[in-house]
Image (cartoon, rainbow over all chains, first blue to last red; front, side, top):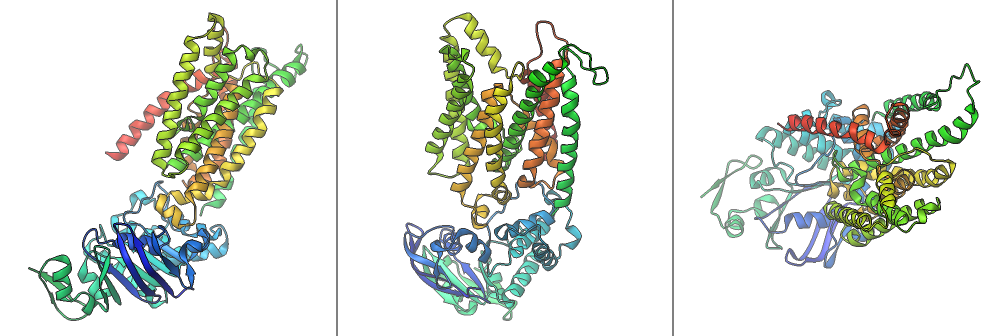
Length: 248
Length: 325
């Protein structure tokens, strides 16, 4: 397993400006920032989906674009912003698609990994159900199970909580937290600052393609940073671990 | 995954084909009774007329069925048809030009012209859509090639040297398997088998595309490679089928639909059953055309399949609308 995901002097025209970051495995890292800050672009670079104009992204000690596509796919699981499922497959088949980089969906080892991913996301009862008959929360769990079934060292997700209600959002964050505790690196683009504050080990705040704050949530998302970056006065309420943001 | 159930479906289709082929050899204007083999020229009818025709039906049907399944998987659209890439119209244009120049009299030249037309459409497609790998631009390019080849075909028709040539072209365009010989089988079978092999190689990539283009790339499937395999696979299967049988529509659209609910709905697992079911459909439809009494010759296969296919398509659209409502 590669234990770091890093960028050196990474720039993409009009999007990202000279980012040098090292993200560690075993942590939940949240990328936050106002609209157009370059959050999704950074995530696609970290996933190896986009080559930077200047600088490099690296997985461990290897430069991202030199890693063969299949090998990279075995290592990095990525959940796009609004994931689509084109055909009305069952949950089981959907989760099995995560084994494609390994070519082993039909073997017992592949099946065991699929079963484990289904169990982790509490989907046993829904195994045989077609995707079209899942609720929004169930669908999000199935798609996350698809990412987990690859057995990736890294889980990258772009707004995984979009379209999820409060209960499902918290449940999904807890599961991602568990994955980080098992040694995986979890990198999330998050809109909701309170979620980032409560669940992340580290928050990277971007604004107009630059890092404006980076570190533990209480520092990176301090009231001063929020006021400056989002141009909105805000105050944290509550205790650490269950903070809420009061605006205005 | 449901690998076992997929294997069972493939076995059932092979058994059905094994039953349908001998039965289709008996049916036609002259019925052959296997228990009373004194029918005159029975051996000639079966070996020289019906067997090559049945083989051609299997080859064309398998090619179109497999191409349709791959096409729907690639475009992630159940309404996609192998004709969308403009390869069938390209092949038809080639064939029409061979008539127009009078070369069709030499029977080898028609398939060669048609294959050249298909190859031209493939090259144009690769050239225009090549650099930008997005599926939308690719499809638009295919549509443009389609309409270009279609209008050139119309031009060739309107400039046709004599009415006889024109009627010959129009009849040929309708698509049929009548009066074909082993020579057509020898042209179409290797190309179709090669094309199907290429399409099968796209199976995993098509499965990955279920999750969208971005997710497919992140699962390790390069869109450029996928695109090349699709152009070659569709080009070989559809080009070969148009070269020997004319334009036979709706098989590539209908068959994947009929078969999909019997599979686990992954595009990759649909390829082989769809090819087998396409072979079965064309074989049965062609035997039906032979048997149907029709004044002034037999019903053209392309027309018959369109007559079944168009209502099928309408029912499909109605069902989809209900599903969306």
